[in-house]
Image (cartoon, one colour):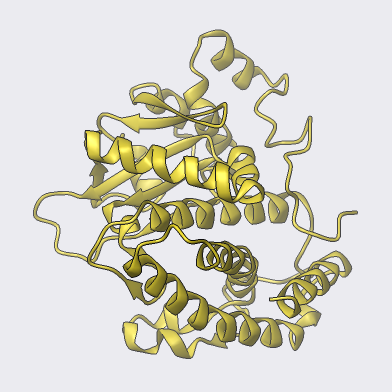
Length: 308
């Protein structure tokens, strides 16, 4: 069994979109490949909602980077899908020339400068949802997100060009920020795939009854669930931090950043190092909530963290 989070989708596995499963075969034969992730969603959610049929109503533009094509969804986001993945307050943002330039630039940056990160994006991302809050909605916009219920699809907003979570914000938009947020969600997807296919957490583990890890750097956000994380959430975050800190270190070492980008990445890197070390230390104390395989993953995360 693997001792690290999978970097490839196993051929013939549940997440293999090329497998000979009737619903997937039909969509491929009908040229509706963009709906394939939503067919997996139907099997994961088991609500009886035909998400793949609703997804057929979406238009998409193809975005290309390093020989890889991604479906950038357009049109009206079907309500049934929006409700399931907590996007009821959002709509798909218009595909403007500015957004086209930003998105292609971010993907090209990943491919050229962060080939390992781009390989993860290529493997675990097929669909892109660039969204914005609906008119009249008074709420803080998400930066980026993904949902285990919807494999291969990631969500982000204009804020992803300005914000490196949790605390770094720049008034100037940056394709590099968008690149990090795309990678961020690709890592989440890869971790979700692994957890859904291999038993990482011990029998009886539940996020509802999990011990909580205090997250001091989220104390000012005012939302209780952001201040105390369950073991599985902390595990996800530690996997993500380990990847993103390498991304940030690579960017800091380059000479083509603007002054604002460099300042932002240096600040995000400085904030991230103690955060990931703290999370790693906390997870090491909670090993009884993991299977033997899960503890092997923790050991690999420890090695990664110690090398930062």
